[in-house]
Amino acid sequence: MRFVELKSEDQLDMQILHRARDRLVNERTALANQIRAILLERGITLPQGRQKLENSLAHVIESSGDLLSERIRTLFLQEMTLELHTLTRRITTFDEEFETFTRDNEACKRLTTIPGIGALNATAFVAAIDNAQTFGRGRDLAAWLGLVPRQFTTGGKPKLLGISKRGNSYLRRMLIHGARAAMPHLARLETATGAWLRGLIARANPNVVVVALAAKMARVIWAVLQKGTTYQHVVV
Image 1 (cartoon, rainbow, N blue to C red):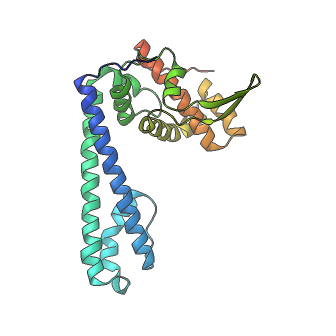
Image 2: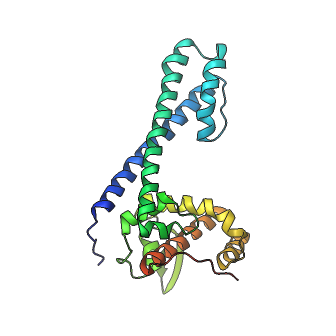
Image 3: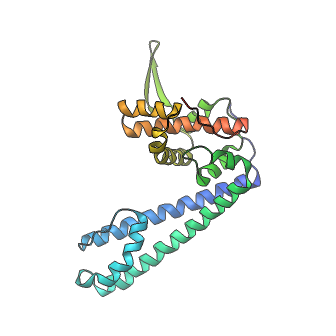
């Protein structure tokens, strides 16, 4: 039986801020998708990427001509553009707070030495598990995040299925995003992790490799928090 440790005031604050930021990100994504879909119905396509979308909207409002009616241009597009910029500004405020907290927190600073872990991931993990004393080994943390295979065993023959996807879905998603961002860089390094990644990329689907790297990162996070050290590359 695993008991839940009491969280400090800072941990509770960080968890609240992460939940609020996640809600704003979902709202911004839904709004951006709605803008793209409505403009596409009028024959206007926008480049991929949130930043490119925000930068293109002012030009679309000015040069859409007969493709958009005046009411759509003023009552919808201008208002939605303002709302999109407001959401981005509010999300940036949260990100700045996470950066500030990371600079003042030793555990967060150690976690940011891990490739793929930035202030956002570091503060989320420290807020959720603190120094990871609840977990006896790194695999326990990976299992808690739902990053280990589900097992189906019958007749003494174990069969490994896909990842369980149990536990904290927010931390799992953040870790997988970090792994996807770090994978190209790590695969080029002449390190033990780089060699392992290159071998895995050669025989598995890229998405499978990302999840495998995320599971390895979870183990590294446990070790960094438990031992109070920074991440070090193992050169081969």
